[in-house]
Length: 96
Image (tube, rainbow, N blue to C red; front, top):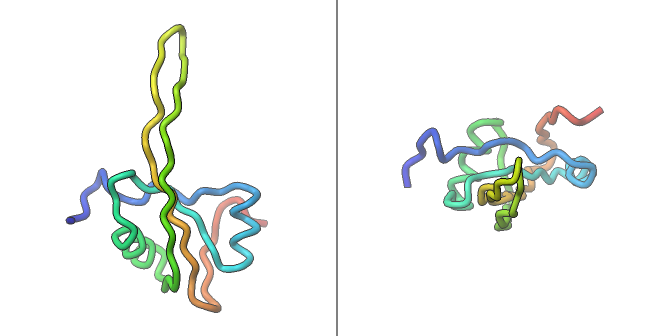
């Protein structure tokens, strides 16, 4: 599968839980539903210049949303959980 602009890692998923996980060298990213785990790991390694030792993929579901009387759905997504090589780090915006 070739990488195109619409199939790239969207953003790091920053919550209280993921900030605690980052202390153990584990980071969570949001990716498009159709992206494979290996493709996501390659993009993370290239984008942040790190080496991933372990990766897991979790499929997220879309949710119903209402806005001004109209019903819609949120998009499908995938969470990619990666563990980095010892001594490497990714700087996230929510960290202190």
